[in-house]
Amino acid sequence: MQRSRPNILVTGTPGTGKSTLCQLLCEQSGLHHVELARLIREEHLYTEWDDEMNCSIFDEDLVVSKLSDFLPEGGHVMDFHSCDFLPVDWFDLVVVLRTETSVLYGRLERRSYPERKIQENVECEIFQVLLDEAKEHFGADAVMEAWNDSLQHLDANVQRVMEWLNQWQGQVEAGG
Ligand SMILES: Nc1ncnc2c1ncn2[C@@H]1O[C@H](COP(=O)(O)OP(=O)(O)O)[C@@H](O)[C@H]1O
Image (cartoon, rainbow, N blue to C red):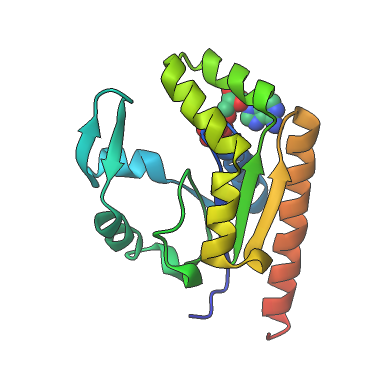
């Protein structure tokens, strides 16, 4: 499907700054922010609740079906901590946020996550699980890896994605 505006997926371990980046990108670009975790909660797109980790085990088919109502037309920035169940051709760019271990630990501690949940997420980041998942699923060319430890990084990341967006828009307007 030829979109007049792109879809961008922002993924990464919880705490790497996905929703912060998405908010800034949407303010600057006029694209619409899809907070998938919130959508899953509000629309009950899950079949189980994990009491120990205090999170839902979402239903991939329900989620894809819900998103298919509006996402493929374009114009969205979506954030989520997993990506291998999403149709590849829905996204024009996949941003994977990375955060240095001690910085991520601090952010998750400030969220009052239980120690086990902090450990699991920090390990997930150390082993770059999300980066590998995104590259394997979408192909390395579609993936932009972006370190996001500081506010300087955040500014640079917004800038980088906005440049990509302008280029994408230019190509579409030029007809290809
Ligand atoms: N680049 C950054 N530098 C410093 N703090 C950041 C940065 N990005 C996000 N944060 C902070 O880190 C915390 C987690 O960010 P958030 O966007 O909620 O992450 P995620 O959506 O990936 O779970 C928030 O308190 C946010 O303000």
